[in-house]
Amino acid sequence: MPEAKRARKKVPEPFPGAYYLAGAITILLMLLFLYLGASLPPGVAGFLVAFVLGLTVNPKYVPYFFLAGVFSAVMGFLGREPQVAWGGVALALSQLWVRRFVRE
Image 1 (cartoon, rainbow, N blue to C red):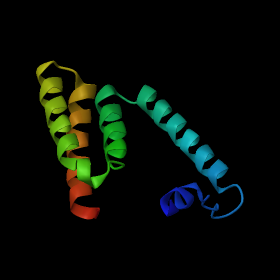
Image 2 (tube, rainbow, N blue to C red):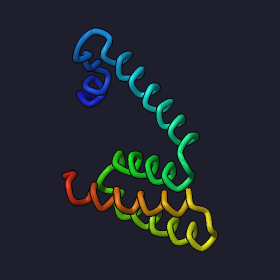
Image 3 (cartoon, rainbow, N blue to C red):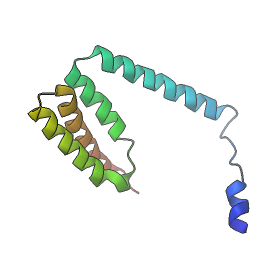
Image 4 (cartoon, one colour):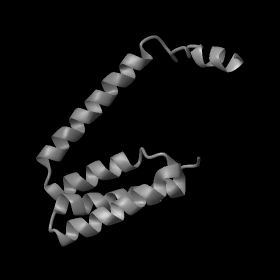
């Protein structure tokens, strides 16, 4: 029963409005990436978006995302889809970065 009481305990905000500020920053970043993805050439846009999103992966899932990146890169280059191909390369590179610098 103590676990249920602990689970219901509300964690206080770091400062008033912190969660609203975090939400606003998240939405602004999403809009920025939407704009960049639409305005840049396909290969550059795919690389940028996949690399940044790949940096947010939990380190215990790195091997799976690395394989997905390699698979996407191979299929993208074989199918002559630059956004998919360079996105796969970026995803694989970001997973190497996460594996090297982020600790679980």
